Image (cartoon, each protein chain N blue to C red):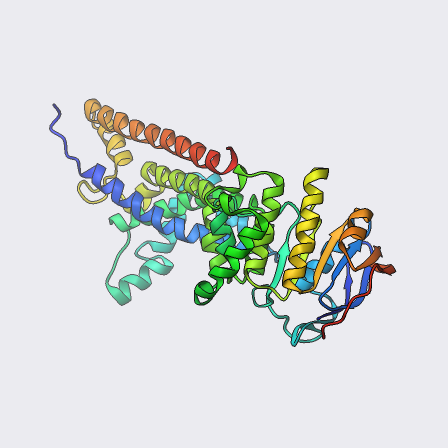
Length: 227
Length: 222
């Protein structure tokens, strides 16, 4: 058995879980607000949200460095006022994960809200429901299969994030070495067994996750549509 | 009492509607796209006129230049075409959805009575996809009336039903109107249905009232 350090697994799960939580809340909220409103420049705002999907991770990482680096716009301010730095910390990995996985959550949530029958929300309104109640009792449960798909995709993306994380958080064993990072540097240093172990682990995890989501979604959609 | 006087610019024409009704059944008959559903949406607060006045009893739902009363505060029952039952809720939850927590205790007897009159007591634990078209229509009626509305709007309520079920549901509607004694507005394509159900028929074309017919004398209650 390999003499393994399991910290990449724990760190990856921590980074992916926190980033997924942030991305889920923000993605659902923003997609719902935008789905209900039409305004000048909406397409531009949406294109900006989806931009990290099409940009190379290094470009995203570069942008994040400009913002959060020691001399970056936000980074220098954080350092000066709170003596707090984001580069070369696990928080940098979380921020990189948030930025690259947000488009997946946003897109899934927007599609889920778009496909809902507006008459159901209207029916609830005529029955005295506030917008808050309409959202929690009608929109959210009906959009849930789509939101769940976005949640899982975001989690998987957060777990697999490499390029932007490397640029913002760097590779510091025990501090910022997520699984993708551990794989890359294990291969670099010729530790193929270690790399294989992490590759098998992350692939199995991803595969199981997708299987479970597909099974769950089908079961729930069937519940409301077939007798 | 319901008073409606609205002007609204639609895609192909300007809608101008003016009518007043008491606790009667009124039918809007007209071709598709003549503005029938838009009138219901304006009364329910799901859309707003450009100008006009909508009054229900003592409450001003809409008047030009003022903020409209939101749909949730209008107490207007709305039975949508195809019913719009919440697919993820049981029949029981659908019916109770609009009943406020503070009114739950007092509503028990009224809802029990509704379930008996409409014959849907046995469906309470079923989901909408597990019941027939006629049953859905009854559940949607019960749901709309459970909030104790001051007006009931019905958008082609019977169009999805077969002839026999349709006849039964028409009888039920008349029976319910006798019990509730509030204004019912029914939108329909079917002239015979309008004749059978309503006290008054308004014919619409391109957002204008082209004709009006009173079927039987209506005793005003206001």
